[in-house]
Length: 426
Ligand SMILES: *Cc1c(COP(=O)(O)O)cnc(C)c1O
Image (cartoon, rainbow, N blue to C red; front, side, top):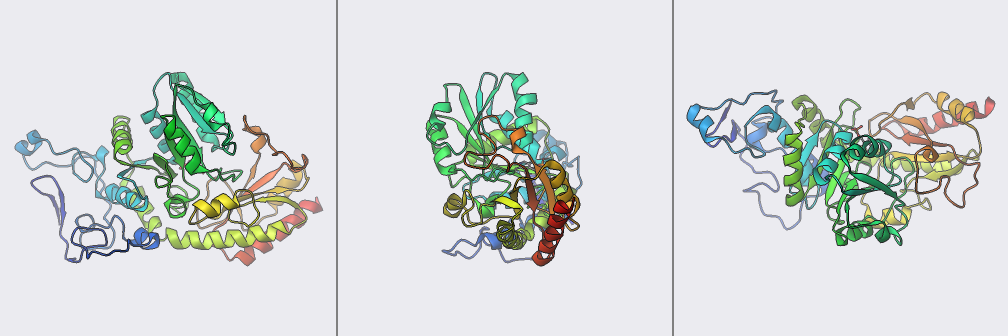
């Protein structure tokens, strides 16, 4: 059923004659297909799927050559060409291809074994000794750890900045500033920043802008179209969607994609075909899962806002919540991840709340079908911006982050209600 053509291109027997939207031969249509259609269609090229719906799992290290002449000619070491296992095979190419199609302005996508590996891989691709990296103060904590443990010993200096202070942002640049790492909303504290403005300033200063777009995914925020150079995602979250795989991605236009690809290959980054197949399977339902978890999160956020135990709800989709206006201006979707801050209460009370939950699992990560809770203590990690923010009662410090899954929201509300009772019964 399989083989390689004279030019090394994969060939799978396929009975399907109709081209998919966007493919060569597809009926020309003025209207590009909507993202929800694209998550279903993208990456399903007939030469990769054959006669079935999904690309098979190609477990491969060695790719065989036809004869010694074929080997001597040397097949093109290009995406979509059989060459050697570290360059992937159709399962991984289909996933990368689908993610590229979902990100307007992207020429290609590089896959990494985790989201952190994607952030590390992209930063190591664009930075060299002597460079300065600017990192948003609300960054995912492992991104901060990466700066400390990997970049610093290589002679790359990291400086943090307040993502909400546009006015002083240009002053943070020096002639050595080479890159800016953004994250919006911040995955603990949910600040939404003005990405188009920050990315435009970075570009004007000659720096590369990288956005950790895990929260919104390209369905909720078109990173490159809003001026970012590289869009990073932990596929572990929404794309996988079932808490059963780890993976990351970096999508970019032609120039940066070529650099990311070169460096990722030099560093030996490759993802397993089994995980790529799982990620593709997750991707196909991502739009409906996000729609449902966003709606449920909003229902829960509205309910929490009315509770006397809650001082602040940090949910960009919620009217009146910090960052809501920018979210409305720039984003086309949300997700199930948000935080809230307890009114007063100490750490023991917060633990009683967490332990009083039955439907929310206690654990890291998010974006799965199941709801999760973790305590958040931003004050512990921040260096540039105060926590709690100015204007808050200093007693309202302790936070909780919820990842809302696909359960019935009424059951989740009942669970939260029981946990509040347990919190104050202690
Ligand atoms: C989880 C996460 C990552 C890292 O992803 P892994 O796949 O767990 O390595 C990066 N950024 C954000 C915002 C995350 O939440």
